[in-house]
Image (cartoon, rainbow, N blue to C red; front, side):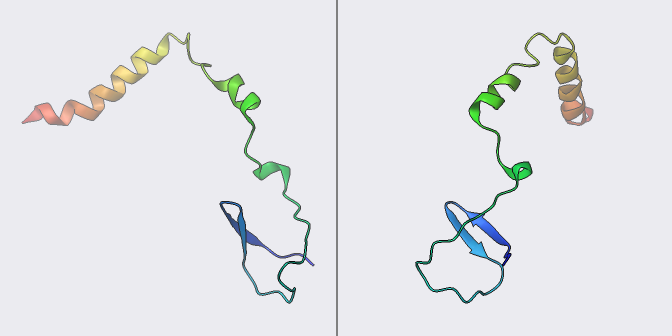
Length: 73
């Protein structure tokens, strides 16, 4: 039997009623493509833009566009 559900914290809320008694142990198969990467994978991305010289220009342009309307008064 396959049933879809939504995770909220450590609880799975099923999207349809099932006829299984409370307390019955079940097995949940979670597809790899929806698992959040662990800390080791995230560490590879942290600081990836650290030495990108274009970032200052990009953020300066964003700030200019964001605040340019304030000075038109």
